[in-house]
Length: 92
Image (cartoon, rainbow, N blue to C red; front, side, top):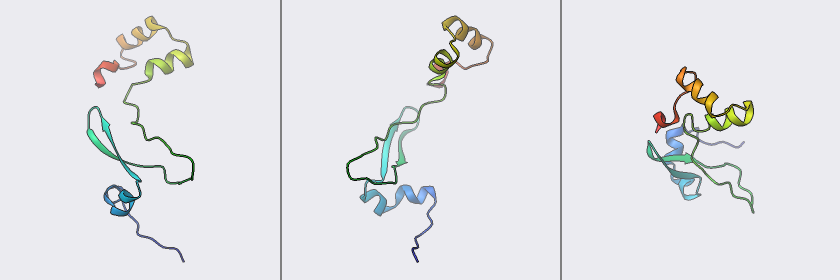
């Protein structure tokens, strides 16, 4: 019967075996500094999954609303002024 320890997220980030196997990565985030991230669990011989920082809050709002809904700059500005969407500069 296969069995293993049940680790919580904090324990996974500090597990010596997982660190030695290259499963725990550190990313530099703009607000939080260095943060541990868990890698992609399946290991395949000739493929590696690049670990990239997650998007920041509101980072792609203009892009999504422009591409998906066809909103232009003036419409986005109107939504910002009305408080419907946030100002991306505010999240820096």
